[in-house]
Every structure is written in C-alpha cells, then in structure tokens.
View 1 (tube, helix red, strand yellow):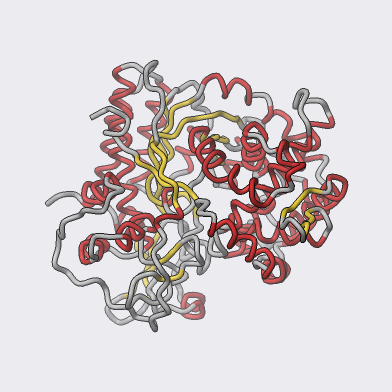
View 2: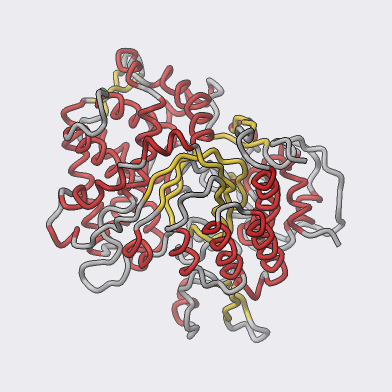
Length: 553
C-alpha cells in the first residue's frame, strides 16, 4: 500500500489538477444541513516557486533537506485527517478534476478558509468548529460534563466508545504508524547533520513525535543556534480547533538560515526585558520577565506542510508555544524572508496602489514590512502568560478567543516596540512613518483572511479601533486611507493597554465583547475590499514546492 503522505505529496506537487481517480469510496455524507455553496476561488492565491540558494550547502545538507521534506509530507497527511477526515484521499479522488478539486487541496477540505469557512462543494454543510478533533455531534455541554482526565490537552483526539460515551485517544496512538515513519526520517536526518546540537535536537524531536511529550525537545531547540538547516515539525498551533482552542494541529517548515540577514537581527531580542517594564499597563500585568535567551533569525523556507500551508501562509514563526519554556528560555523568532518578499510584491504593493493615500505611498517599504512582521513575533514574548487572578494560563482562560487576542496583542505591541526603539535611536536613520503606513497597508492585507482566521479577526479589531480613534482616516473623494501619525501613537497605547488587561484578567466576557463589537467588517470597508477583488489582487500565496522544485530529485 502506498503511504498516505506519498499520495498527499502527489496532490501538492501538481498545482495542476489532472489527477486520476485513485479510489471508489464515496465522499462522507454531510451530517449537518447543507449551506448555500460558494464558488471555488483558486485564483485568489498567487503562485510562487518556493526556492532558495542551495549553492553553499554541502552534499550532506542537501540530502538532509530531502529527508526532512519527506518527514514534513507525513505531517501534511496528518493535518488533512485532523482538519477534514481520515478518508480525505477517497473524497478528493471522487471530485472531478477542475477548480473545485484544486481549491479543496489549497484549503485542506471543502471549506474556504479565507471566506469564513464557507463550503464550496455541493452537499457539504458547515465546517464543524472542532474540525475532526471531536465527534461532529458532540456539544460543549457534553464535553464539559464528561469525566476525562486530560481532556483539555493539546495532543489527543476525542472519540466515542461503542456505548456512545466520550473517550480520549492520544495522537501517538491514533497516528502511531505515521509518527513512527516520521521519527525514523528525523533520525536519518540526524545522521546527516553536520551540527552536533542540531543532530541531538532531531533525535529528541523524533522521540517527542512518538510520545507526545514535546517540552524537552522544545527546551533543547532553544539552544540550537549554529545550524544552517532547521525544521519546525509536529502538532503546534491550536487555531484549527475553533470549538475550544485546545487541540494542536500537525505542521512543518523546512528552513535554510539567511546568515547575513540574521546577523542584522541578533541584537533586538536583548531589549525585551526593558520593553516589558515600559508597557502601558499597571505593574501587575507585566510581572513576568521574558526569557533572555530569545533570538531572531531570518530564513528562506523551502517547504510548508499541514496547518502552515492551509489558507493564509505564515511569514514568521514565534515558538515554542509552551508557556513554561517561554518563561524559562524565551522563544525563537524565525522570519521567513522569501515568503515575506512574495507577499510584499504580489499583494501589499498592489493594495497600496488602490487603498493608500498617494502622498503616503512612499512610506511603504519592504524593510518596514519585514520589521513590522519581525517585531510582531518578538512581541509575543511581552505581557504575561498566566492570569493575575488565579484563572490559569491566558490560553486556558480565554479559550477559543485566546488566539485572536494574542495575535492582536502581538500586532500592536510590535508597533509599540518599533516606536520605543526608534525613540532610543536603535533603528538607525529610518523614518518612523514608514513603519506606520506599511502597518496600515498590511492590515488591509490581513483582514482579507476572513473572520475564521485568528490573524484576520485580530486585524479587524485593530482596524476598527484605529478608525474609531481617528488614527486611520478615509478620504471619501479618492477612496483612500491615510495615517494620522499623532493619533496613531495614542491609539496604539490605548489598544495595548486594553488587550494586555483582558489577557491578565483572563476576561473572557470582555474579550468576547471586544471581538463581537470590533471584529467585524463594516459596509464601507467591505466595499473597499471588494475593489481589491475586482482588481484581481490576490488574497494570499500558494507554492510550487518540493524536492523537484529545489532541484534535489
């Protein structure tokens, strides 16, 4: 039998959609009332060849990249199963070759991730909030009432016993065969690694995949910094679980460090403790001290898999997510330079030509876009991870809202960091207005990800807050927006204070009120976003990627 991840790789290798039927199973019957079917929109993704300069790599390093991509393909298969169904291959094979099938591959299922998860296949109902982590007919009340020690954990599925009661199945049990294959590939990569610390990390990560105990490998990864090749792999982010925000989804990135850009970034993580002290909130909301081992590096990404490849593509990484690791060691911030450049050129600049005041367009630069994205990731380390009133971690207290509130906090505190570092003369001879105008333009880009995305919802909250504060102004005559630079700083501090307080208090009701009030697209904004659609400006990017694209076949 061909392994599932190999079949999935075949689908991804061909952005083209000539795929022969490879199974006779019918697609799963919808268990909820079918909704009005949206139109498949593969054209909203601009295609980008995901390549990097491999000329300075040794034969061993090039071989290791091939092995790591094969491990990443397994994560891709597992994410399909978590996001949609264990029978996704048969369902894909049942679709006629064409736009619908291509769009299903881009979305890892029949729901449009950049249009509030609307179905685009006939006979498919609403996407379950819990994806395929939970039984589709399970209610929150049933889950809350069930006695299942560890039921709030990151690394288990909820399924039913024969009698209908709920049970836990750990990932390493549910996906034992696939994870064993992935672990063997990581060990093979370790044997090829030229950096001893990275080799040890790969072995620890292999052990973690087959045990669901990731903390040791996360801690060790924080100290692995001399390697040119890197990989992020495993169940990591919880965005796919929109029911509770508990379950982590499988993903992977295979990365090559850009040594020159990384050298430019190295100093900024050292400013975190001082910036934490200066946050515009009372002292009790900043008592935790960010780990001092945090580092910043720039990478070219050569492979995305699973959650990271679904819908909008990540252009920067801030990991690990484990709060204990963050407090002890900080985090690593990985800026994905080639993917970032693709979004800047194919999306951000065309948006600016339509929606940004002509007099301010000169302030939109790639360096500012890179810095705003970088400091967003750094800002995840600011604030606190545990509530100040005994409600547990912020993630536990804010449940499914935790991700969007955290993304909003990182957005606004990233800009706060830039402002403070600029005042201190640490950013060199640059114009602060570049960061602000590029920031506003990027908000338009991210809003188009839709309300089902934590990043999209965070940007909608921020956009409406800044409009209400007079920081973003629209010219009704030209239909363009500009930044009021004085009001921008006031709005930045006010929103920072609000989000940090909601997190510190574990204020679920307050977070819900803010999201419901400002996490929406108003009529005027929607009309302006529709102008971008009519101008055929892509919403995001998709990749031609893999071993062959890199010339490693």
